[in-house]
Image 1 (cartoon, rainbow, N blue to C red):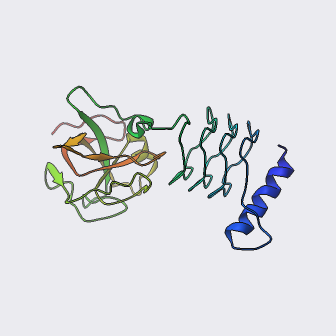
Image 2 (tube, rainbow, N blue to C red):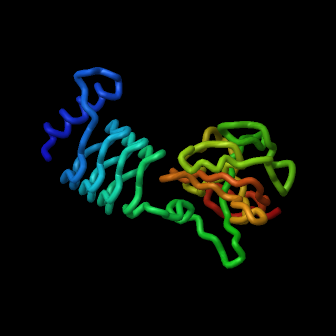
Length: 219
């Protein structure tokens, strides 16, 4: 499929999403889209089932509610793509461990580590509330269990790289947090689909503070 054909399909799909009768829902099922440049493309609710998307540039693409059943997504760039509610059955992302996707590993005790980026007041740099400098243990009543929501209720943690990329001021600080995968017989950790490095927990323990090189500071 050439660039002009893709461009026209996306144009008609955009009109369809806007409710324009001149538009048409994108049907790219079984399409050969190898190495296609679909960066930032709006493919919400599009049919991409069985499409060959190997090495395609889907960075920041809107694939919300798209049908990607059996699509070949190997080596595709899905950085910052919105895959919320997308059908990922029989793809490389079917039943994937999204914590592993962002590089968070769990040890034999069922525990892992994440980071919390805070401001000078000890609050999260995006949403205030809890003071993460005050105590060592943190717990909230509920955690948003919807993996299609990138941000939601809970103690929001992240990878070290995410903290570096989202620093807001010179007085920001990074805290190392330990968490358990399970909270009794219930999940304690929710990692969103194709997360950019964020995940959330219901409870966690502060290990200490790290410097901007990732080294744990002496308490």
